[in-house]
Image (tube, helix red, strand yellow):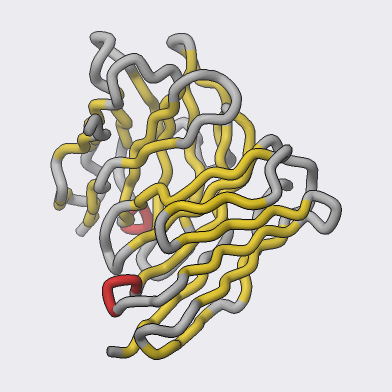
Length: 114
Length: 109
C-alpha cells in the first residue's frame, strides 16, 4: 500500500541552525501539507502546497519557514535559524484528487532543538 | 473556523465495551475525517464521511454525520486494548485540514 515517507525520524539540532525535513508523498497525489505537533498539544497546520506553489499557510509559517518540491517526488520543509520552541513532531501529508479524498500522513520527524 | 471540537476529552472503558466519541464543528463542510494517533506516533486515517452521507461503516468503526447539527460521532464497537490512542476529527477544504484537540481513549484489558 502506498505511504508517505518522512526522513529523518528524529533530528537533533543546535539552536540557530538550519534544518531540512524531507517527505516523499504518495505518487500522483496533488496536495501536500506540513503540520506540527508540540508535545502534548494539538496538531497544527503549517502550510499546504498545490501546483508547485503554496496554497495556504498559517500564521506559524513565517519567514523562518519555507517549502520546496525540488524534483517532483520530494517535498521539503526548511526551518532557518531554529529556536527552542521549534521542537515538535513535524508531519507531512498528501492528498489525491480535488474534493473528497482522504489525506495520508507520514510517521513524522521529531525535531529537538537544543 | 471549521475546526472540529471533540468530546469527551478523555474516555476510559473496559475491553469489549463500545466507545463513542463526538465531534462538533462550526461551518459547512464537504467531508469530515477521523484519524487515530498512537502515543508519540504518526496519524492514521480511519474513515472519511461526505457531507451527503449520514452513516458509514468500516470494520468495527461506525461514523455518523448530522450536518443540521454540525456534528459527527465515531463509534468503536467491541473495543480492544490496541484501540488505546488519541482520536481526532478533521474538517477542511483542499488547502487546509483542521484538527480538533482530540480525544484520549484508554481501553483497559
